[in-house]
Length: 455
Image (spheres, rainbow, N blue to C red):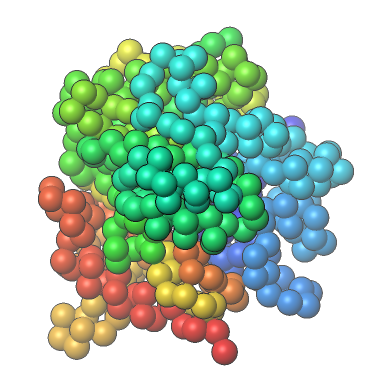
């Protein structure tokens, strides 16, 4: 019997897309309203917060809870799951999978943690022969604060902690006083990080796949939405991807070659599967700023764009890397995604992620996933469709409408936590980089509805 695969994630919104092409079940710790919408559209989807036997809401449960809690184990058994594909691997998930006899279709969590450590980026880049910004390792302690007071730390610089997700903890420091503030705010004295020279340019991202025997697939390059004020409290926070404004052909080629070089380098450490790079497209070409050695935050939406373009998705490559059944064979994938092949354009389209910008804690307000817009007459939020994926959209969409995947109301959210995801079949930003006015108005209304301070 063919091994069935479940995509497992803390938030079901991270998983929507790959099931369109593959025989994949979507399982998540939270997202019961979205799971119901996906089932209505013909997918097998389930979320732990739908389990009636839970005594408390899954406020911050990760994907490992699906494998360790009785309700999750029942779902795995009912769907006949033999392997799990995690949005992000963890040691806890690996232990739970081993106990249940499930394969994990991901690189080892320990290797992922090593490769995503931002302090390792210069060494990995040097091995790959790609440029990175000038970097200084630092520890947040009294010595760094004293150096700053004495004017012996160059500013402005970008500070990055050793670990972080979606730009969390990454800040621009423009003065010695701000460095002292960083030291005072550090969770512990001696916390490691780095100060990085600021590279001016366009943030871009590329996703690739490492397969056995040195085989590589490299996806299209696109613009990354970074530090959009309406979407994130982090000045350099990642908040989506824009596929509607193609990069210059030579820049896209350089970015894809950079991704291939990184893929070959991490493969020498035993890495397999999906990875992503973030770079800044400066005047002299792309400069590497981050490696994401796992299923990338943008890949599930990319799958939808790739299928819309009529080509096999990169999700096939990830499955093949771990010997799982895929909807496309390797030769078909290489025809489209070989590093030396120019892939087809995927736009227009955009994915947008909104995070809590307010301080304190909140519970998301009730909002069903689907197509939302502002009513042209009243300006009130209006649900005008049940689609949760691009493939379900009626064309044309109502003016100003977007697919909205909100956080479920059971979660407790801090500042910087994800509030919602938006998918668009057209551009999210103008060529100037600003959010389209109708989208900005919709984001403002959605945020007001979802960001409800906790009592």
